[in-house]
Length: 524
Image 1 (cartoon, rainbow, N blue to C red):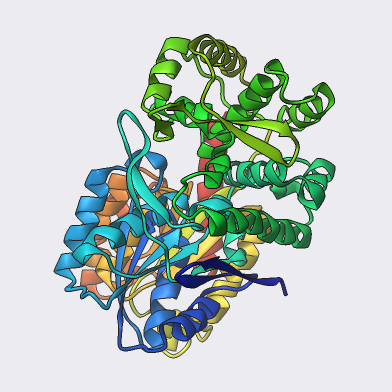
Image 2: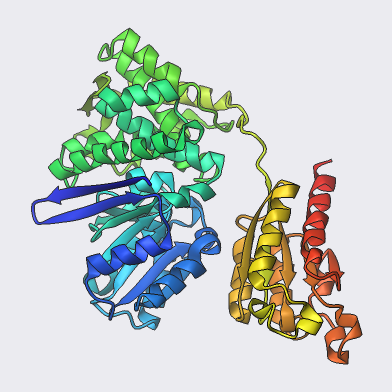
């Protein structure tokens, strides 16, 4: 079992940074060790996609460990990393009566930990927080070092604060839910660390390629911890980015400008950093700083990365550079290379050189290519409503003797046979079911839902299905049309593409088959 326990040693504190191929129970155990008490309120900030996968499990695990827990989930994506999002979260923190001894938990990718840390830094003039990164980008970069903040329409991360977490807890098992593009995006920070440090880490990246998704898992986990160590070592020497820490912005100067120039909607952060690193290598070579062979070795590696095509004006890119947070009175900080493992900071890059770099980068992104990823599997969320957790004991003459665990196994087996990815959730709460449906829109291609008793009463669930615009199939184990009169009425059926009624547990497989058939028709 992979586990790496690192420490960021600062003049006034030590921050544990722990990686483990474990899940929610491990997080709860670590929190108890760090906090040393359970009579404390945890305010968990996450996004709706992470909440869909892990929210219920984390909430229940923390509560079972004795913590009082409040949750705040927002739509995922860099586009929502704005000050109004933080303001809304602060409202929720006040409404939940979070006190100064409460602790914020940033549970998600880099956007989540940036927002959570910033909210913690300003709430009641600063309260403690803990980063629990679930993305590769978060584990190797965003969650480490205490940089928190949000974007401004004129630039990335222009509003923020340094606010160190009490700890960073990275559950490596969470990486299993990332798609290929998210793996590649996070891989950019691993490659950046390898270029900055050289040595064994660089050789590993050179040998295995720039996309950690394609690596053997144990080797990938080891390399993630090594990349984190690079950042930890630099931050330990320069916590507030007065000098050395600026080298961690390698690839970010033009990378951030590219994100801003495309309104944070075209490139993932990692894709932009990969492109920014290519521009920095080219500029280093043109200034006779970096030897031709070393530049060629780095460029050959970076050129393997696919990225979207975009039409960007050099003038727009240069304007975005002018708003870069790395600007200082003496000029813009450019992180260049003397060699692999030997970065340097330059502020004397002339406007003509900057314009040439911007022009070259715009030409490159204009020739971008579609991502050469294998088509991902279809994704289905199965949602079971109230009392279905009692299968096997609840009216076996109506619902049969199979338990809910047996139903879960049957659904999982059917998903494997159909070649689809499935998430299975059950709740006795109408509000939780509405939240699950809303969260599904950020991940799933279809929804299979057995609303249980809410079938006949819930306008809220009906409206949620209608709102998310995902193909949905209603399923019922029994034939509701042949039972009590009130059960014959379904408020859910009109907003579903189909329904499967009275076919027992096997009806779930049929419902998934209907989702698959619908997806195939849309692909034609």
